[in-house]
Amino acid sequence: MMYHHWMSLWRSTKEALLVAAIFAVPVFGGLWLGSVVDRGLNTQPVFTLGLLGLGVIGGFYGLISIFRRMNGRTRQ
Image (cartoon, rainbow, N blue to C red; front, top):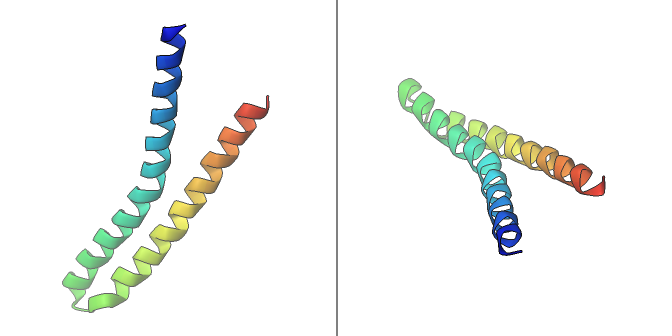
């Protein structure tokens, strides 16, 4: 009984960390890559804001897809 409780807790923790990473990685990756490109081309906020926007869109797309997958798994 206690084993099942701990496994459920670890599964929930794993899913929460996965959701956080799916959103955070594209956002911070776009921010970092945009700042690197802007420093290289000396075009300050242009690429940073553009790639940050793409990262946010990609993050939300990843969240929607993982939530759809999780919802489909719990219905069966």
